Amino acid sequence: MILEVVDIRIEESKQAEFDEAIVRGVRTAIAPAKGFRGFKVNHSIESPNRYLLMIYWDTLENHMVDFRGSPAFTEWRSIVGPFFIQPPAVEHFNLVGKSD
Image (cartoon, rainbow, N blue to C red; front, side, top):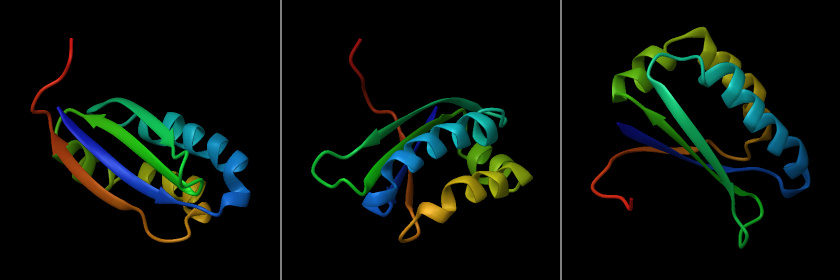
């Protein structure tokens, strides 16, 4: 399983709108994608304009090819993109260990 971590920055004044948009965007555009396994989105306490979106995929290709190459990616960006104050930073991670 692959973890995609997306570091997102928005205007603080748009927090309530973005909270709704990001969850709706994941559920409608990303969740139906091939290889999608789940997500978490966290809002920073210290930096109110910062969010971390974590999406679990079966493979890197499910994210980079299957999803990003599909019309669903355009739909996703149309929902959340207007809130971004800079392009999000995206990284992919492999699991090394976890608690039970």
